[in-house]
Image (cartoon, rainbow, N blue to C red; front, side, top):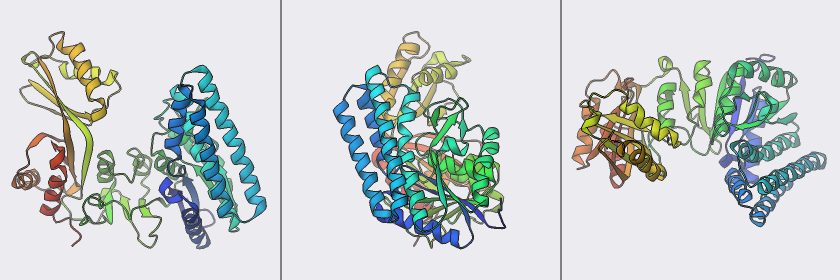
Length: 474
């Protein structure tokens, strides 16, 4: 999309980028810099760091009737935003208007929580409504700082910007056919007037107009949804790291930045724990062939990681990155009665699914005598109890065992598909460290090899693969 021949981008800023006065000023300066260079931005913002977590606590407090607790947190949130507002905006007319909006919004939040308290029930629908207030409070401040710098700007909720979703509260899915039409209607007139829209991330609305959320980390998703709807040149996801790394640099100092990566590889990384991107966020950009760039708010001269269609990626790396997923557990289902009986796996996963438990990884022996899978550790007891009650007690399976002290290591790379012997190199490197592998899974895409090891062995396994494929920055 071009308006008056200007390059168009969506710029998304996460909570860590706007957590205090100085960071918000830096974000505004960054937006102003590109705006003054002729870039036409749509800005998407998360809630200020920590606010969404506080709202989640407050919703539970309200459900339990703990009025004093949620009142205390409301006052804290109001004070946080009021203090930031006073410190970042000098023009009194701008600050007064935004302060009035924030006060009204906080009053609305109070009414919602009081209603939950009186009813004594917290539905997914009402929880989404509560959680939406973080972005509703941050977006006006960012817009106000831009106005303070002489840039025409306005703020919109996701609903006002045209983000229409289904009614799956807590993890809503965008209805792109409607969004593409509505976003253009809502945002293009602003962009043509050189007005910078600041849109709340994470928030959408059902076709009936009820507030929905896109899942935690959903501001990334909002950015790519809007970018796809407008057909922008690039989508920039600003965070507090330089981009996607070969591994978490906080755990492995030799990890290096990945300059370019394919959509397929980046998706695998986000699913297996890379914290820089919402797992579903890449779908709209990939489907519309719009490059996504992960950038560091605090190191803006670094170009970051560019995510492209795999045909355009310039890299000969076999393994591109490694992820380590902790706080998981391994469940083993076994029994001779499973052999040759159609539908056993479906029954196992149906039981687990009914308990709202997501399966992260699956492996089944060719003998059909056992099935192993990985789930979140906090759901382990619930899973074992459900499987024992529903299947073991009825003789459909013989045994259910579990291991709680495990983690998953995932090696990701498009180059793995065309390179023989990759799995052999990985497992040989692991064996040299004396590490025992508990479970292995590889998809037909051959882009990911995942395996489970003891939690204490996880980091050593990562280091072994990192060294084997020369991913170090030294």
